Length: 248
Image 1 (spheres, rainbow, N blue to C red):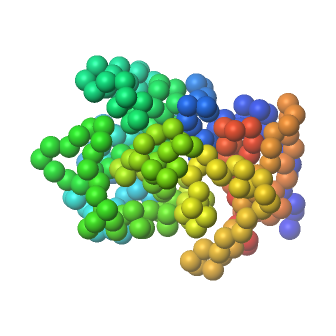
Image 2 (cartoon, rainbow, N blue to C red):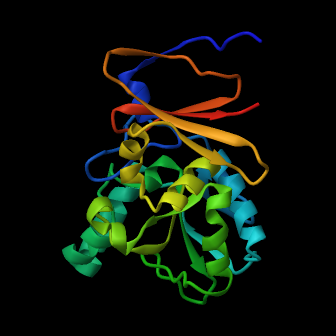
């Protein structure tokens, strides 16, 4: 078997990929162009990253939530995020806005990897939709890591994320990472340091073993050589790369 070719990566590459951290201290790469598709199920105006959209539909179906779990907000342009920020400031004030709305350029929604969900109702709050921890919503939350999603903002991690608990906001990071974050009780802000402690291994439900490691970017060009033929690489937007390798 031929060894994988070496990858030569620049610092700009650390700011691209499905595992990028986006928050007040790690703003979005302004050149990022998500691979967007409309959400399935009759939502032509709502778009997500292609893989995230596919897995979201599968997770909702698995939870029995078709017709009951509704997407409220998905990908947002910079202009839309600016409008939401300004409008919320006027209507609900600076304290509420700081708790629940990310500043333009610092919102996960601009990556195409985040979605806000709501339990179907006649009236839905676009900023704080109702997504209770019961019924189909609880089933979705329980199954979410198996489909690559994490509940991004919880009260216990508020000091790290800078955002109040949002039971409705889910972020796609991919199955092995969502399961690993859930298993360890981590938020995305803690993931780079956790991986700096050494490669982490996870056994999936199908018995396949996955190895996750992090490589800091310490030079203008970083060389990386995956160990096997089945791998995935993402920047973390925190000065490094996260390498995911599946055993063949």
